[in-house]
Amino acid sequence: MEITLWIGLGIIIIGCLVEYIDSTLGMGYGTALTPILLMMGFEPMQVVPAILVAELFTGLLAGVMHAKVGNVEFKVRTLNPKRIYESIKSRGFRSTFTNGISLHLKIALLISLFSAIGAVTGSVVAINLPAFYLKLYIGVLILSMGIYILVTYNKKFKFTWSKLTAISIVASFNKSVSGGGYGPVVTGGQILAGVDAKNAIAITSVSESLTCFVGIIAYLISGVSIDWILVPYLLIGGLLSIPFSALSVKKIKTGHFKAMIGFATIVLGSFTLYKLFM
Image (cartoon, rainbow, N blue to C red; front, side, top):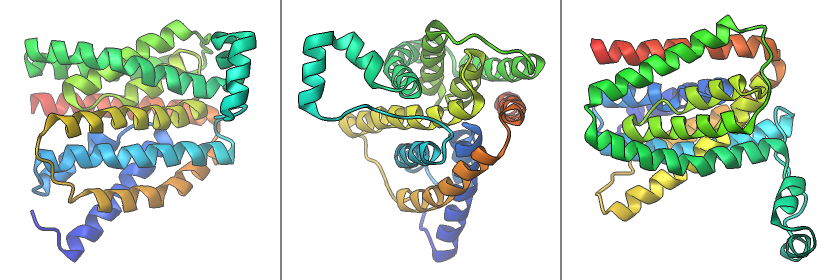
């Protein structure tokens, strides 16, 4: 499909709006943008790789902006290789990692690391199970998570690494088998694992960015012919929205965000089931 001036402007505006929602609520970019671009007449191999590239850069920038305005803390004590080596030598790798990296960055790295396990598992399952049941599972999972977040609105969950590990694997499994269902599970799941809602949104942006990087590498080494025509338009739109998103997250109360994430998760779960049966 040829992109005219007006179509290009339309894609930039749509990309800006969808990225604003994604960076503000931690979900919705691929779920909303993929069907919109397909309905506009673009091919899947134009849409999916472009979304991965856009989310790689917008996710990283969103993480930086969220950290800059105080929504999250991504800190590394030192990037000096000599100091890192000396610390590992004297204190060991585990102690160096534990004390040298902020909690929020550890969570983002853990989610990204275990995404590889979920992606491998998802690929195996996707080959052996019908697409209908895979999409049904994802829709029910997301919908149930949203309902549970709202039902337990006033409950404070205890933070545990085991819950985060399970969430990471499930989210990347969903991404692998269907291309969606990552943001709602990671954002909503972090809240259920005891992570603050504002922190969860920023962490999701960074972890999904790293996951998209792996996806892009997989496309490049697969030898499949890819059309990158949508990339600059999605990048422009997405990057324009991020400063406004970070400021929005900063100003809205954390309790309100928990409710908003619960409602958004229910909407995306319902939308997934609607597409499946209609």
